[in-house]
View 1 (cartoon, one colour):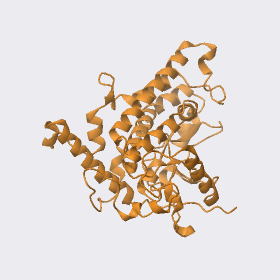
View 2 (tube, helix red, strand yellow):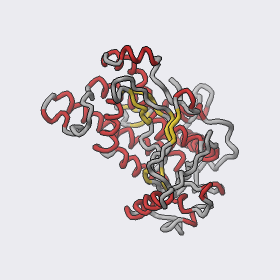
View 3 (cartoon, helix red, strand yellow):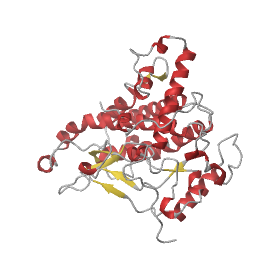
Length: 356
């Protein structure tokens, strides 16, 4: 299975301390003094009005309806098209079972990428004291194909939050270099906007998870706590996986009941094709190789995979827990630096708001 960390281009330009103290490097910290409510180091996550103000600033400075889209064969991310030619797709468009069968491996990969990308997002924001909210999605790598049947395939963003707005939006730069978050213009932002081409029912289920069960807002809460340093990225990921497990279990139970309440959470959706098989695949991709039900925690093997640690070559992993923790912190610092300093292919910032 392709791991997203292999997409990062180049080597880390510098190393942060293994303790991951609030970021000392100029590329990020220079903006903190321009943000309202954050003139001093905060002791808690800001209140709701702070995030409302961020959204107001985004609407003033950007065009929310403008989204750059790139075809699957022209993008520079790990965006993944369904392995069917246009001719094959046309022939199979009315055979939903066959189409779903062909999509199963990609559904699992899509769910797994959601976990990968969330963990790397936690690393990116760790102890930065930048508290994000959801931004307008202005970028999309991959475009779903349709034949004569509307909404046959859709480009599903794997990241639970593809775009962010944080205090960076207050920096006094020119319109040409304006950014709305610490991730703008990075290769990681490109990766957050990579999609997987899948049947429309997958996007429907994603919408249920993100909105009806508030997983997106709860994920933002986790990121903010990590940004403050109340918890570290591994602890944040553990909370995310528990949340996903509980929500998917509840949806699965509702679906299997086969009662009038089965579709109560998604009756507003056009597609009613969400079924137990789809939920099983999402659960598998989300939890099978990431989370231990026995210990109620994220698997060490998964953390080591994403932190690029080879357990066979690293003697520190056989030592005490504190030594292992320090190794994890060091690796997270290296990856945080890499994420924040590796420019994206298009180095996108913001789309100017032509109506302001």
